[in-house]
Image (cartoon, rainbow, N blue to C red; front, side):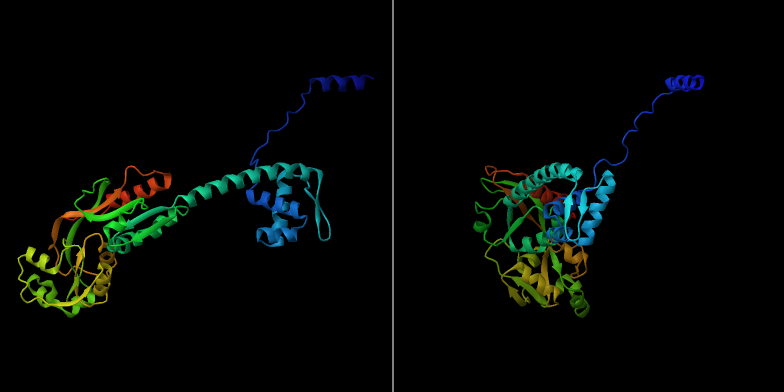
Length: 326
């Protein structure tokens, strides 16, 4: 009795240990829950593997790791099928609701992104030489934003009401549109490194009229030609002969890259080709700067949506970091 009394008194003095708090990650990885849901609905790891397009071994492993996470069995394994335990059935009821809610939200977000395609129109030169080299980087960072690009040298087509943004060359005055300058118009001769090597006189300004000059035939009367550029630099054009003419500027640039002659290069449009060495400036520090430029146009009455703002900010950001020409 004495011994029992002592033990009883000591027991009264002992404090019951507190329940240890849960530490670590409470939520398991999402792929464990997806595997569990698929296996529970199909009542088979093999069928679940076909639903999720992963191996049966991967399904089994993810379910096993989920059971280890909760430290309870979730399935009763059969020969070719599985059935939920009581704990598994309780977990499935909540997991299904949660995953269905996430699927609905994701579906709505994707539908909104896909519906709000941003339409951009631009001249052939800007579309192929300035925009296209930049689109790959944009798509990597904004994969859910779809851009529809229309390339045309017709101002009327570019200013169609169906366009969200337009890039055109001019003086900045388009009635009914907000215009923001992207870059100015600085023009200088460019040619391929091979053409420069085979025609060393291309480095002489006065020798240009006697060389293979590539021209662009444009319906825009204000478009700068070799006559205009040479006269602006006090060079006689009496001996000038055209090597070849193209109806679009991108074709003339490609001809220069292929070594057919010398073409007038618009700064910013030919910058990527100069940077990678496909074209060179045979006469450094000689150029003509006009009062025109390339502007981003937007109708202020049109509907503004998030994707449009993102694309507009991206284009203005490209303008902000552009190379500056005197």
